[in-house]
Image (cartoon, rainbow, N blue to C red; front, side, top):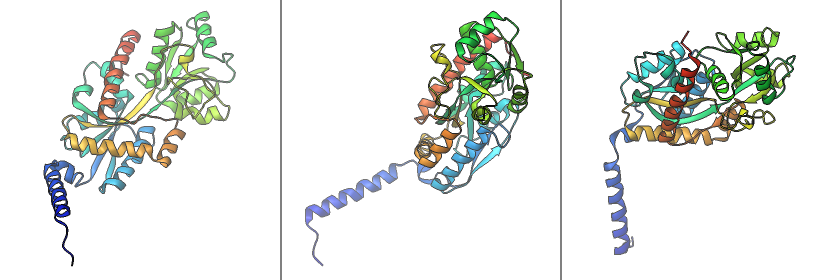
Length: 328
């Protein structure tokens, strides 16, 4: 066997040494995580957008990281019960949270919570924003955002606006619109999207504000008419429907979803999870599924999601104060 040239041997030895040093310098958590099943807590019942997203991302993480990521539904108090469980969990990366818009809204809506969303929950990875939609029964004469604003001002207190609940993203998005435009309507609250849509279809109420995924089948079928969506850009799911911001510059009031965990998780664990969620969002199959759900993807760093947390808390605090809303 021919001898290896001395300079090549030196280079190989150096490479091996650097490799060993890199492995030794790598934090233990990054080398072993995950070494057991991981819980993703969802603060809502099975079947909704939060649950669907958690199972989709959980399956990706299971496949890529070699341990089960198990969805645990802990519904109640608009995500407060599930969030409290995560805030009190060990910050080791084995208990995660499907964080969403109600977390930022509840921060101001509830006078006392057993946790502080900003101080006790750590951002991991953004997933997507979802538009709310302003929609009407087709018998309602209004067809544009400008017409709707003018109509409510010309008929003060005579227009009922239905939403799926106090403190929901559609509710506070409607209050933000009122704050920015001076619209005059009466808020009618329902316990969820299903009964609200039923009355909207039946003509018991003519104007509704809802998360787009719940309403989009009725809009596509012509049973409801979309006036505008609330994201700052049009959604690929309904590209012909304008945004509110096209009439009311600066308006934005969407739902959002992201993966989070208890404060104090090892940074290397957060980075592993963040990289995998971003990879999932870049996967053509998952990307197509999320867009079909009306999603606008928000990949990025943990810091990006942390900024969204803080911005949303500040934004909705002003709207809650303006509206005087109290939890049901």
